[in-house]
Image (tube, rainbow, N blue to C red; front, side, top):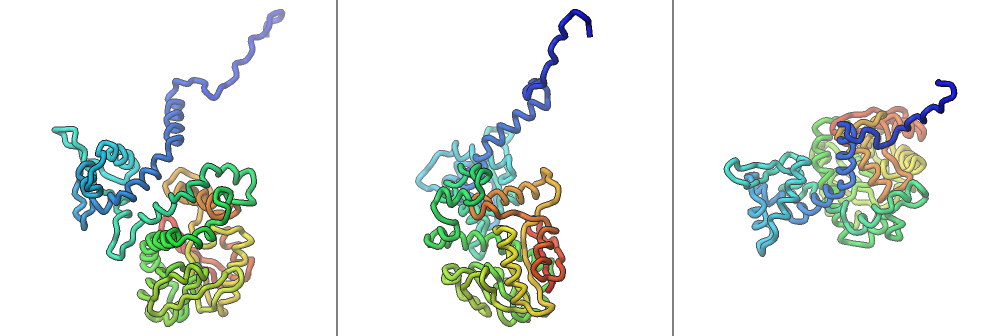
Length: 370
């Protein structure tokens, strides 16, 4: 300090200090990408609506096509190939399509990556396309501008604020939405269930299996085909859901409320049920399952399980994005949980132990033992 002279004020660090540095350039680029991120799901929704994956796949050829060639297959009356190419290029940068450049011209052609192939309709009429469409229906889209309200008041989820009633009730009154929900769940369930049936052997010795929240019964159908020793399958869901479920050999569709009771069985199966409910609601579901099982019985729950530490891996991003989706659409107080959090919920209602089996990147098989 110099006596008799005023010390110059210390320069405060600004959020834009050294704006020309490499780290700040990357930061500005990242925030621009995030601000425009809505282009990704809406473009994905567009290619599903246009049935572009099936147009490229053509029974397995996956031959690279130009935007104009794709357009000729999906919109015979004509369209704007330049705008379609803009969508294809953007989704190529996210790994949905592979771009093929002609070194002698400006032509660009597109084929499907493994990600893009998930949108191809299989021999059973299923794909992830319905899941994409289901997420972007008008009623769901109306909820997203109100996500911030879940942080202010969690008593009501944004979907209810936007549409006046809970999502499941809303679906039940709209046959088209309910059918799309069933197709979406089937499209997601089938490939996951193939992974479960290949990597998990916990169905041995089970003669009567109950699927809680089984929707159209696709999971039970696959389990019974793989394990014919299971003599009886009970597909348990809301009455308005099972009323539309197809007939499946060996499966009985039962309508009811899992918060009141669950049908009895040697084992109980559920997929993606617990993550849409609060801890108290989960305890009610788990307790009803525990009551319906004999000594030595088991609950086989397939749920997304989040890591203890947040990172930027694809898996963590997919899980946490799904968590915000559930918060926005189904329950503002629901949450994704770690394996240990699921374990503690199970132990609190009477299960003696829980084991986990990692057969898929998104779901984890949680086996609760009574």
